[in-house]
Image 1 (tube, helix red, strand yellow):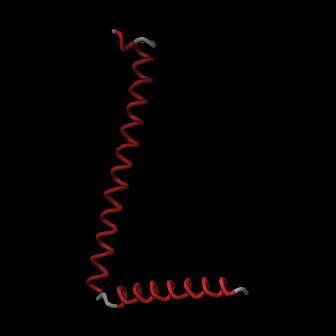
Image 2: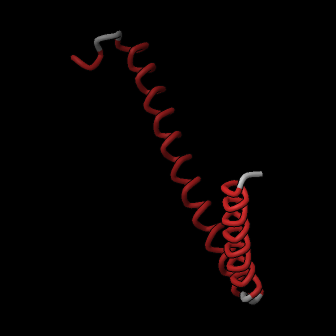
Image 3: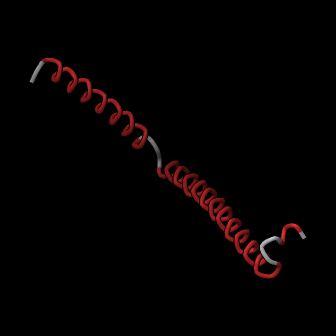
Length: 81
């Protein structure tokens, strides 16, 4: 190995150790109640986002269905009536 590769490996190892230590300090410093709150917030936000996506997709499906029904009942130029 060259000196440059050894130096880069040392830098990467120190960054991994620093981030790992910081992450474990945060996780280990939390009580069970605090973890429950964080998980609850995550679940709530995920549900909100997925609900909005589902509503948006449902609206698009219903608009396509309405367009097809109008074309079937009144022809292709139904919007000019």
